[in-house]
Length: 288
Ligand code: KIV
Image (cartoon, protein in one colour):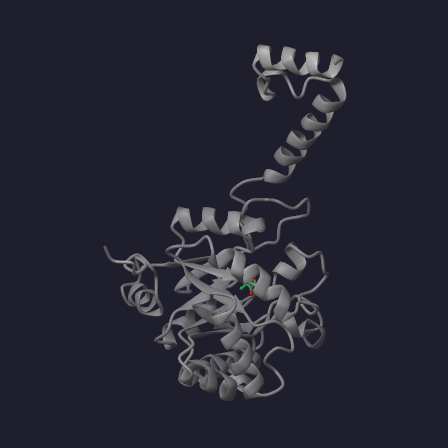
């Protein structure tokens, strides 16, 4: 009997590129823990991103800036343990790759070796070319990320649309071409005008994955919690809520609290009992 893991179902950067070449739209979702990753994988998504958005979604920060390598590794490991098929992409957090290409390579290696990821993602354009080359040369697939790059929120002046002027659009196209040339297997385009995202996608051979970038990209990514409506906050324009779970979960939690307080939970069917003779024997023991 073979003890080798069944790798036949596993998505790879080669199967992702094949999809793009065949013009089959690529799907990607974030997941940050074992249960959301198992569900996302069972649904058949092509790629799972353990995004540093976990800082805002799971850890309660206002931005992704405080997220550390240790935070990322904890969540990457829990996702990796419960996924069989999806290609796993782990985000390099703020200041884990900006200092030098050596630092970028070391931390990319940690996401693969310690976090169980198949690929890494990092933010930024031409200024990342050298680090991307070093990571790719070590055999680690890299996903680029341009447009709105949340780790630069303070420099960008907020979470806002990028590439609106002709000059900014040209810069973004140049960045995308440089990232492709540096060896990225795919690029996230976040909050980029739809015409520009479509134009960039047509110019690149590698697939683009859009978020707030319209339908012209080769694939789409959404944050799991946004898609399921797990937050009680106004929906962002580019998000489609496929479920509105927040009020449903809130109601279920309130029913539980009311049931416990009202004595209707646990009911007889939620409890276990000892055989009657053992119970009687126990009571006799207590009376000795
Ligand atoms: O961290 C994240 O979830 C991301 C996606 C929004 C692309 O980078």
